[in-house]
Image 1 (tube, rainbow, N blue to C red):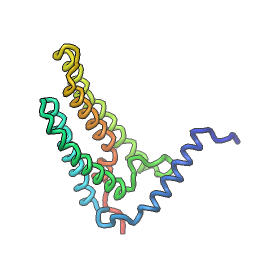
Image 2 (cartoon, rainbow, N blue to C red; image 1 turned 135 degrees about the vertical axis):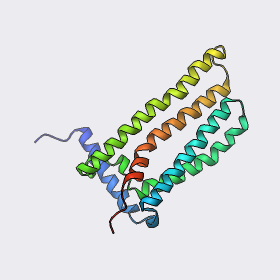
Image 3 (cartoon, rainbow, N blue to C red; image 1 turned 120 degrees about the vertical axis):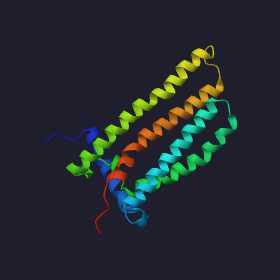
Image 4 (cartoon, rainbow, N blue to C red; image 1 turned 180 degrees about the vertical axis):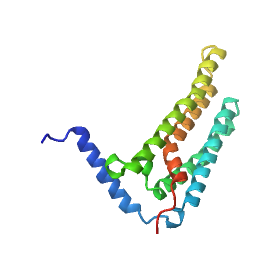
Length: 176
């Protein structure tokens, strides 16, 4: 029998850590574990992402005070994200050893959609920054760089949260 590789040991550590946190939060937010409530969290995250996208476009338009709306949107994002992770059992980023075949297939499908979403949406801030640098004679406009950064962060958050959002939306209510 061969010794466990570094990757095997890391995966084993991830599984143990996942199970530890699962035990810690297994009874947290019990009334939010229904599909209806999880969907509210997903809609809330979607609205938060919409606010972040609008803020980035407003910053690109030169409205610097719009950046102030980013702070409450970020605070709301973290609150909703942590709640969704807790009530959905973090199935979107669960280690391989924790999931059965059906859960693994669901997770992998949701991750694939999240990656595709990230790749396509990332074309927006990339295009904005590339074409913006051409039209501003070298791209020295700090508003453009700041807005492009906000756009990129928003897209990465959307793509990173998409698997958990998809699973939170589609999974049925837990059995009693």
